Amino acid sequence: MRPMRYSVVIPMYNERAVIAASLSELAGTMEKAARERGWEYEILLSDDGSDDGCGEIARKTAEELNLTRGIVKILRAEKNRGKGAAVRSGMLAASGDWRLFTDSDLAYGAEIIPVMLDAALEDQNDPASPGCALLIGSRAVGKDGYAGYGLLRTAASRAYLKLLSLAAGLRCTDSQCGIKLFRRDAAEAIFSRCETDGWAFDCEVLLLASRLGFYVREYPARVLKQGKTKIRLIRDSVGMAGEVARIRRRLASRENDAQR
Figure 1 (tube, rainbow, N blue to C red):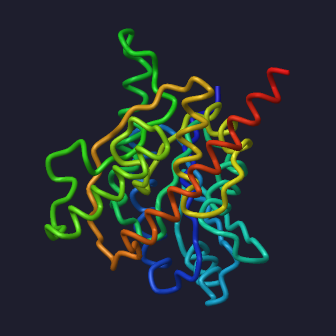
Figure 2 (figure 1 turned 180 degrees about the vertical axis):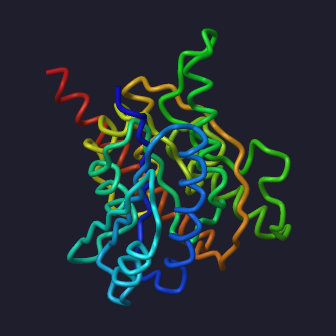
Figure 3 (figure 1 turned 30 degrees about the horizontal axis):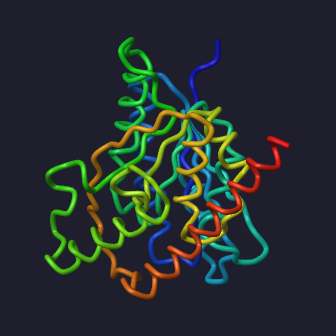
C-alpha cells in the first residue's frame, strides 16, 4: 500500500521577490512533517505566465533542495489568465489524496499546512462527523485571525467579505481566505467544473462544493505576513458582486440543462 500523498499548489505570477524563500520554507516544513507522519508530498508551482524570471528562480531553488519525501513541479502557462486559472491548473495536475492551495508569499505561514491535513484526517475518522471534503481557512473563526490588522483594515475586510457572502448566498465567514484544503474527489469534481479565472474563483469553488454536496468545514487561520492590500472596498465589492452573480446564473443554467 502506497503512502498517502499531499499536494500543495502555489499560484505564481511575477513573484521573484518571494518565491525562493517561500519554496525553501515550504519544502523544509513539508519534509519534516512527511517524515514524522509517514506521507509523501508534492509542491506544484503554477506559473501564470510570469515575465519576471520567477519561474527560473523557482527551478534553481528546487534543484538545490535536498528532498527525500517529496518533489517540486513547475507548471507554466504561456500567458497570464488570473489566479483562478492558475489554481485550477495546479489542482487538476496534482496527484495528491489531499490537495491544498495557498499564496506564494505563504501569508498564513507554512506550519499551518500539515496541521490542516491533521485536522481533516481527524474529522474523517470522527464517527459523529460527515467527514469534511473541504477544510477552508477563515480569519473570522479564531480570536486572533485579524491580529495585526488596523481597525480600518479589519472593518473593511469584514465588510467586503460580508457583501460577498450575501451576493453569493454562502454561509462561510471568509470565502476569500487564501488557504483551502480539498479531498481528492472534491478537488477533481469541483475544479473540473470551474470556469472563473479571476479573483471570484473562490466563490465559484464554494458554490460548486455546496451544489455537489461536499461537506465544508472552516479552520482558524491568521495572516502572519501582511502585504499591502490590493482591495479597494467599493470598486472591488461591486465588481466581485457582479462576477458572483454571473457565476450563480451560469451554475443555475447548467443545472437546468441537466434536468431537461
